[in-house]
Amino acid sequence: MSGLPSDFDLNAAWLRKAQGDLKAFMEAFAVRLEGAIPGRVAVEREKDGFFSKASHARKITVDGHEHVYVIDLQKSRLATQRSKVVHGVTLSTEHMEVPVWLAALHHDIQLLAEHAGQAQNVLHDFLMS
Image (cartoon, rainbow, N blue to C red; front, side, top):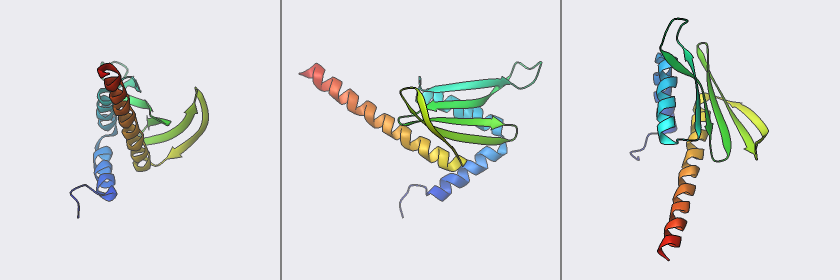
């Protein structure tokens, strides 16, 4: 048995975390994504009340490697979708269950990291030659 958590463990952990407080989950998720992949994340925030200065993330859009991912807090539930976009044109959009959406986003972020590493290697080789 490997030391890595299984898909079941990851999904169960997500469910526990998200079900506690969806506003707090969305805000923490937005902050983490903004820090991890700056320039590829757009966050729409909403005030917690009419007179409140506090706000929370209501909608997060992530420009992944192959898709655009959207997670939206709608009252007391999360709605997720993934769109295939080519040259600014949306070719298809699919609604997904949150754990499936998170796994797909994770995969696209891994692809982004691989491409960034390859680009860094090419730049290094060019500068060193």
